[in-house]
Image (cartoon, rainbow, N blue to C red; front, side, top):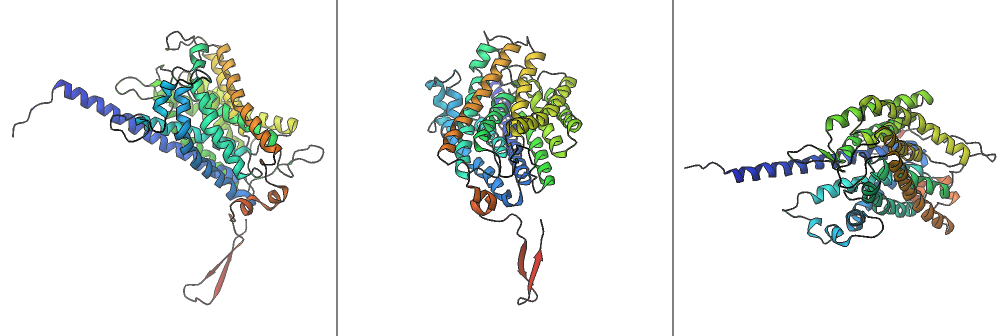
Length: 450
């Protein structure tokens, strides 16, 4: 049988399709790695909770994940595509994000929409998980879910539209640059958590009558540390999702500037280690060492594509030092009970990152035509926007919920434990009755203490 060689046009089509498939595969695995973030948050928050609240803390994370996916499908993705210019939507641009659009389902001519939506919905779920840890052990499940949906499918994606969209007004007007989403994900979620915790109030027993803070220890520090390590593993998927795969061309950031995975690898690992070391210097506590690793990455995240690795290391140390000190300050000074230091790690880490880039990368050119270069002023003002975008709705919505007694569980329920009230199931039952398989009539009791 005679075989004919493919034409140049056919070869070109094959090459292009190979690049398209590789792009899909890349973001497919980035999304899978980001799900590990949520396994980490699950273990992290359950371990940071007392025995009587362990399962309720985990269920909060599971439900937030489940509710954000459909809400982000129905309106979150539309917000990103349509509202890049502020609060006035571009209906034509947003049409591709409408639930009935051809882009929002199986479509053999569109290999990109679903895979990018998948990565973004995992960013959205991450914001809810960041907020979740701050409010464990006393928030109502229903009020938490409402707040989580607002944060994950409305608030953070506004920040992404403004600062992460190729035509976002923060970039076009102020030269905003934030490679690793320290602003639109971490700052927004951290400041949202701060606003809610102010109205939620501290856990019963967290402060004495004179305001002296009393440490409330979680039931499993090893589980918390393992959870934090899993979050760091998932971070590599998170950062992969911040890169645009361009087929046969060089990788770019979401801003269109060139980047390599090699640069991100150098700087992420250096910032991570700096965060651990910085937190170790000021606390010696394994919880804050691993939280410091997160703060370190976040503090360098805006410039992971640009920094020389020793600079990323120094910024990581700064984040690792500042995060536990910031948490101690707001606890002692303002009596804010942020159970896992979410604001200090994510809010302050993001703030350090955005301002740090304005200091160390001022003058870096944007590729968007007419956009100003990166500047300290632009980064500082953008950080202010992200802080307000997170804090104002978090504080305002939770204030209303608190006024109508919908935000917090009753004191009796809090004292009993949310596992019994909200789940209801015990994470570690004191005794597990069983029967021997050889002697069915003989009752055997195994006792487990926790």
